[in-house]
Image (cartoon, rainbow, N blue to C red):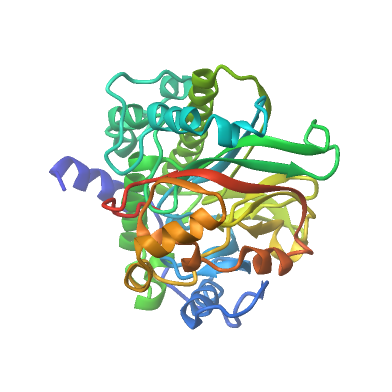
Length: 412
């Protein structure tokens, strides 16, 4: 770290009144949906409930182990934000675009659809465009903090690209049972993407997480990744502004991917749906203002439309939130891993995966073997476990899938 950066970090740390960690007399309450969780993910949500800043927590049915807060964890805190409880890919999100294409295009124009994905976005940690794509997000203020300003060029080069790990862009069949989403009941071709704020978001998450841990060196080892930034401090305000910017940047990424693919195909957009996860919001629950962290959890307030994907070989769902107060208006963000990446690569091989996908009529452009559908929980069981959180209004079946190549290190 340069001397300038050290001075900046020290200034942010010194701006925070030091409060020694004191565990809550009794843990904050939490409720879980689903079962069969790893013991470590259960322990992580319990650890979060020990924090003096914690009000209430929830564990979604897709939950699995993460840094600090489990992925699939929801946590409401008192005037404090926890960078690792937001996640290392700030503002990771879903976006679906329904296109004015006949359903037969998924078979008859497969090569054209594949070419559209290959040409209009890039995948992996180093993916970027030589000619920067234009979006108003790059005209926003990136100068409010040195760590943010230093990443602007990198962010611009990666604008419109997709991540690695479980991030994807895919065409599929959307089945809408009722007249909803401004569309008539029936089947449609839809484009679905999952990625976040790319390298810039990852580096900012790392910077502010380490800053929080430097501020709260008194935390025991098991709570270290739950270090927080007070919202009344310079550090807290700076992170919050950076998080908001990364939210807009992640949204812009998806917007450009979908816009350029639709333009490449020369088709009209019938409907757009999108939602964040890996974010924090200022909300009021149970009469208390709090910061609600949804790390791998979908906002599901009453009437809110969201997207919950499965895997490359299983369906995803468009849902409407029910506003369940005990979950802090949240739901799962996907199927959730049930097997580590290392274990998946040891257990499965490419021939097995190809045979599996061929049997479902799914074309895989590229991916890592660690993303096999069998590495994920049963999405139908996940949806069954959260019937009191969301209602399903449409089903999405993937047909053409692209993820980062097998050589890419996961970014999620």
